[in-house]
Image (tube, rainbow over all chains, first blue to last red; front, side):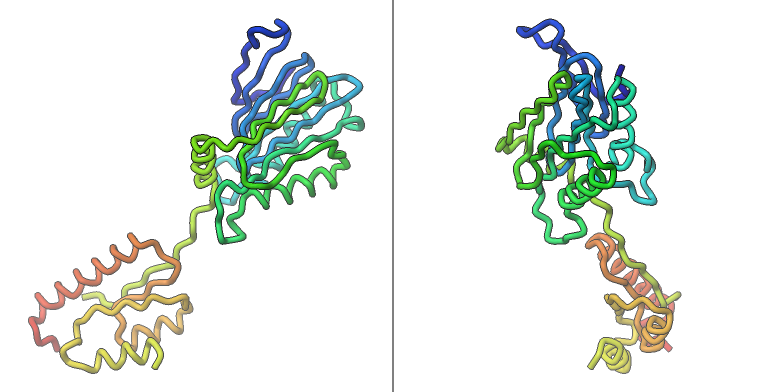
Length: 199
Length: 77
């Protein structure tokens, strides 16, 4: 059983026929009771893998910001960490995971754009959020690879809990992720304009 | 000399009676804007602003000046 997610699922040719791969995009949440591989590509975004080692089930999410702004058209979207974590916990529970046994593996938060304004540093906001969230929810972090400046490709095996991370130097991927990050930055608030002359 | 004193000094020169003067500032209280109006500023732009916004506002200020020139000629009251 798996939660709805903007993802594609396909069998991996050349490997065990039971091994499937799910590609997880921004805002996606996926959990599975059958062993499969979940793959995603991260810049400043965060992916959290939750795994129940007794049941051998797990899931992953992929979010871009801790939470949405007041003017966001979809403030409860799984693109935001608070909702992405809530949905991941629910999805893993539905496939048989026991919250008391769950361990977390956390990845991402690379500073793909070098912005001088601290308020716009999405990566730092995301890292601070997820560490605080997992601590508050008493979900132990089994492993993590956070920060830096290089994008990451993450492969999570839901049946074993193993994660493989590959850092990429590809300029094309870096450019693509930088573009994505630019889009999630809050628009600047411009000041008002007043004309006194009425003639 | 602060910005509003400069506006006042420019306005006192007859040749600049209709010169558009935009005040670009971080100040946005009603009282300071009222002082700007009394000093003779044409408009008030609060920072930050986008370059396109500045171009558009300057264009509006020039339109206002052109209308005033059409109405009063080169020697406005």
